[in-house]
Length: 124
View 1: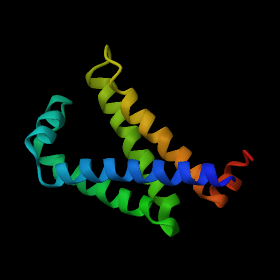
View 2 (view 1 turned 180 degrees about the horizontal axis):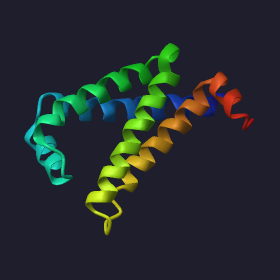
View 3 (view 1 turned 60 degrees about the horizontal axis):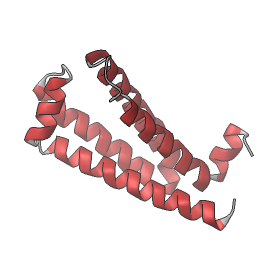
View 4 (view 1 turned 180 degrees about the vertical axis):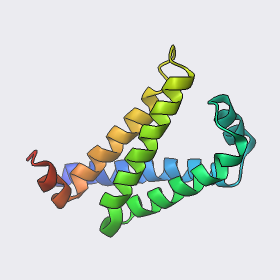
């Protein structure tokens, strides 16, 4: 892997982690916008902190190299649930693409940074 792709992977991973961290903290502290968005999607308001805690744990695992693969699995699973919930609540909208793109970017960043992940996918 070239140094350019390694830097792209690092920068991408940092930006993704910062976004997930911000989203998780907003959910954990039960910000009004997070609660309102969750209720709009058809989920009860009392689940916002739990969802935020799950995202916080997944992001922490994804951020550290030794646990990044486990964190990636949890992040992608979390985002898959987000896609399903967003699609089922607003099927006429394309808003479900937002978590789908973030999941794809997380996988791409991990692919650029993790040799064992690349070998497991056998794409090189």
